[in-house]
Length: 292
Image: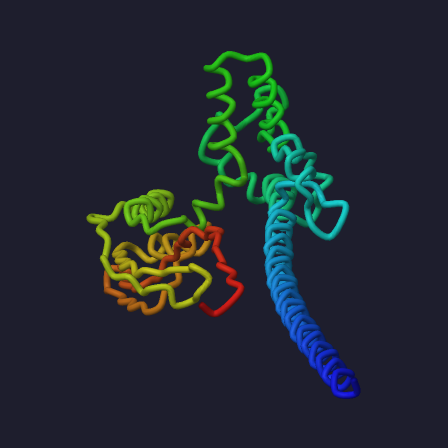
């Protein structure tokens, strides 16, 4: 009887040990799965945080560009929302609501600058307002264009557009610093300076020498040769008109020779400038959860 009781106790202890082992193994498996799930969640949270950080950087960059250019009004928060961008209509924005932007500086300060505004008026009588007898202001030309768009014919719209292109102070900017290397336009400018100085050159030709973009910021240079041989008054008048020209001619080297018949011969090497276009470029950044 005692032997049977001992065997029964051993069986129960062995069975309890089995249950305990199964419970330990089950708890270990559950703990391992839980750790794996937690690690995966932590990795996903970390990855999502990186993605959101890069999205915030992209939104801040877009916001900075839009605000600097003046395409939309200032956002309510630190960055533009989707609703604000959808509601943005650049052509209907009042310049007064975007002060300090590139667009406001161009339309307010440069387009209305009386000194820049006077340059194109000197070369074309169509830039004079027949009613006031004075040069058209940018505001007046814009009003003419808006009225033509609203109620005018196609011909009137084209005429108003040509008026702005020809007579606006903004037209002076590409004349002073062109957006590409145009040797023919440069020689045309020099020829006009010579004609204004009552002197006609025998020949005009490009040198074909480019000095490269040594100044950075897309500013490029190329060389021009100048040669004037006339009486001293004419030669000095040519130099004065070159100095007054809105197009910059930087004379690097010059040789002046006097002759007995009061002739002054000038031979000079000058530098002209042009600006290559600046564009905004978009870049893509690929985010990966792991190195593989």
